[in-house]
Length: 67
Image (cartoon, rainbow, N blue to C red; front, side):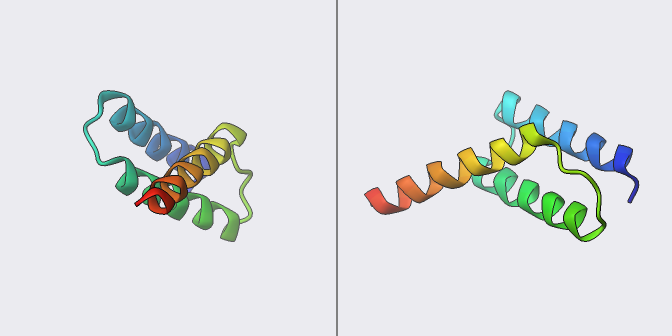
């Protein structure tokens, strides 16, 4: 998939998160999948998306630890 296609996919995910149309954990998993695929294809990773993934990962880890 071309870099621009990945950016479009990421944009759709971000809209889902902002509109609360999707489950945050599901969106997190999609972001991880996109980043992993981009890494495998040697594409540059958008820093803001990497940061978002890290933030969500910490949030879910804290939720899991608190349960």
